[in-house]
Amino acid sequence: MRLVASGSFAAAVAEGREARRPLLRRWGHLVGVGDVRLDNRAEVTRWSRQLSRDACDLEVVLAAVAACGPECLTQLAGDFALVLWDASTHRLVAVRDALGVRSLFYRSSPNLLVLSSSLSALSADERYDAEYIADFLVSGASTPQRTIWAGTSALPAGTILIQRGTVRSFRRYWCAADFLPEQRVDEPTAIERFRELFTDAVRCRIGDQGTWAQLSGGLDSSSIVATVQSLREDGRVAHGLAGTVTVVDALGEGDETAFSDLVVQRFQLRNEQIANHWLWQEDGRPPLTEEPRLWYPFFARDRRLYRTVADAGGSVLLSGLGADHY
Image (tube, rainbow, N blue to C red):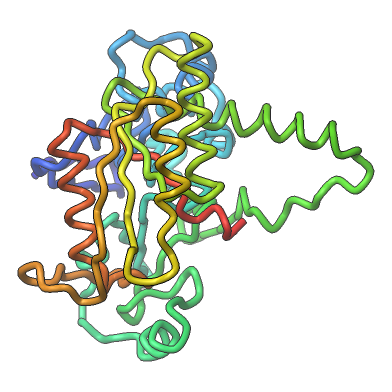
């Protein structure tokens, strides 16, 4: 456990064996605590030139905020849940990435605001939120702020929380629904612009030689895989994919391996297949969680998928999951 205190701010970090990057850093009068992985690190680094080459992503963000102010947080691309304390202004800023990949929760009383990436750390009196549970059982989801614990809220994706003294404010800095389709663009121009944006989005997320991708045979994941390998063939990225993993459902009409096999053959990719898992399949003790997900009953399948990629040395898994939501 690492502890740091500054004025009326205190932070504690339990750095377990699963921590892949530093979670607590100081930068001048700023203290930052959180899990930060940047996709636009080079861009953010240019906002402040006072960095060593081995600075972690959290330090890159702190340096950018010191140089440009907290508004630059809205320009970060990647996965992050971050809390910043500015000792010079006595201002706390909490921010969550645009798609909500990283979690951040908070609980408040008249004289105290507590934030955590762990929901269990905030379950003070262990009272359930019955409305959240009912929503989840009926529809598989609830409102973005509600959690299973009464009195504990989630900071929504793409949102900044600012606390200074007793004044607290929230601002949503990114939401897919805020973007309206361009009505006057012609089809060839729209196609080319999409290709540029999609290719750039995939390119900036290609890491080292440990990058894998899910491959279902559908349009979304197949496009991601094909784009990565095309970038590698063109010499625009140093490494292509180390492998792909396909969840196969041969028990019904959802088997898409005829399509995923074509992608694998075209690019001569390693492909691991996880076949015919079913709901509540026995795989030891079901994982305990305070953040239920709609696909929770497939925990055995997901465990095997994780082990397959991790045992092969994979450190990043690209996915088309969620593409239909936007």
